[in-house]
Image (tube, rainbow, N blue to C red; front, side):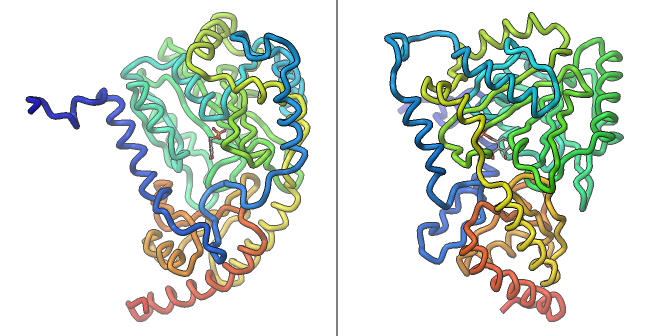
Length: 404
Ligand SMILES: Cc1ncc(COP(=O)(O)O)c(C=O)c1O
C-alpha cells in the first residue's frame, strides 16, 4: 500500500488546474450523443459533415511524395511554405510581413501555446474576453499563470475597453482577443481595435513591462458580406497573430497553421530567436507533408458563399420563430438567445429530438446556445421544425410553468 495519495501526486499542480478548467468544457463537448444516427443534426462543433474538398485531398497526396533524401530529416521549417504564407497574409492583412516573422504551427492552438510559452512567467495574469475559446484557460493555467476575464457586451459582443482598462494590473502580461469571434461571429471594428491599442500601450508604459496581444484569427478567412480581415496588429505593434487552416479548409484534425508578428513588433529579433527555439523543441511545426502543401493550401477555401447563404436562411427562419439572434459577420456560428435562462435544459430538449447544439454555459454565457453552420443543408431542414417546436413549448411553459 502506498502511503501517499495517487490522485494528488501523479500530476503537477499546474496540470491539475488545467485539467479542471478543460473538464468544465468537456462536460458539454463529450456528452456522446449518437452523432452517427441517420437523423442526427450535428450543430455541435466546427466539424466537417461532408467529404473533404477533392482538391484539398489531392494537394496533400501530392505533398506526401518525398522529393529528396532530406524530406523526412530533422531540420528547419520549410522556407517555401514560410515565404508563401508571408506573401499571402501580407496581402490579406495589408501588412508587409517579413518571412522571418512567420512561424509554422500545428494550427491556432499550437500558435497560442508557443506565444504563451515564450512571453509568460509563472504568476503572470492573462486577460481574455468572455466568452473565450474553450481552452484558453487551460493553456494559461498550463503556464502557471492566471486568467482574468473581461465580459464582452450583451447582444453585440463588443469589446469593453473600459472594462479591460480596469482589469489591467502590473502583473498583466498578455491579452487574448479573438476576431472573428467564436461563438458570436462578431468582427471587431477598427475604432474598437484602436481604442484597445491605446489602453494596452499606456498600461505597458505605466508598468514598464510590455503587454502582448495574442490575436486569435483562426476564422480570418470565414468572413461574410464582403468584409475584409482587420488585424489588431495594425494598431498595436506587440501583437502575435494566430492563424489556422482548420477553419478555412474545414479539416481541423489535419494540423496546420502559422503565427506571425508585424514588422513593428518591439524587440523583434530577440523574439524571433525565442520563438524559433520554442517551436523546434516542442513539436509546434506541422508535419513535412503539411508544410509542403501550404503554398497550395493558401489558395484553397471552403465555399464561404454557401455558408453565408446558410447563415441567411437560418437567421431568417429563427427570427420568424421568435428567436433573438444577431447575424454573424464571420465564423461558422450562430449564437441565439434561448427562450429560457437555462440553456442546458433547452439544449437537452433539442438533443432528445436529435438536434445537437452547445449551451451558452459552455461559453460562460447562459441564456444563449450555439449552432454550427457546418451542418449540412439536410440537417438544417430537419432541425428547423424542432427549433420552432422548442420555441412554442418553452414559451408556453414560461406562461404555464411546466415543460411537457
Ligand atoms: C476561437 C478559436 N481559436 C482557436 C481554435 C483552434 O484552432 P486550431 O484547430 O487551428 O488549433 C478554435 C477551434 O475551434 C477556435 O474556435
